[in-house]
Image (cartoon, rainbow, N blue to C red; front, side, top):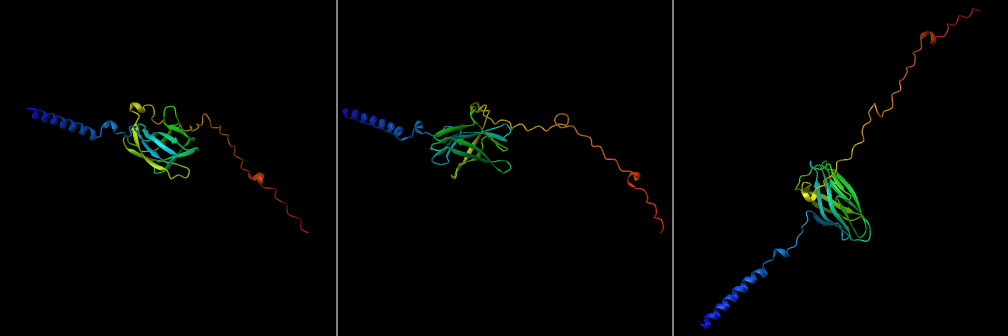
Length: 202
């Protein structure tokens, strides 16, 4: 009887070790840390990092606002070139100045904006944006295109294009036309001189 009781205790102990061993070996979800933001990250150089880059598309997909944090870890200011390709296949540059040992946030409600115009975007796609400064090679990021319909991006959509200069109308800004008086055509009497009389014969 005593031997049977000891065996049952040993079996219970082995079951407990087996159960706790599985939990110990299996990776827990709480220990797995990933990128939880909506945007993408990248490094232009050891001194300059791009964090949480996102594009917020307009309603028609022809423009987008870039949201990103440009982190300068160096001791010098950097003029960062943000380059993209428009729907016509031409490269378009925008420039952002990032101070030394500082972070520049673009695209927020109270911060400066970098707007991509004349593009062809679809919400959910990845759009290539190139970041570069100075003599650095630069880096291309595939930036996710999101919609301002999402609550967290409300108010961050691109603004309308600049209002074109109005064409002046003839009634408002054009100077009145000055009539041109044609010069009178000279008559035959005015242009012909008197007929010389013949010289007397010598």
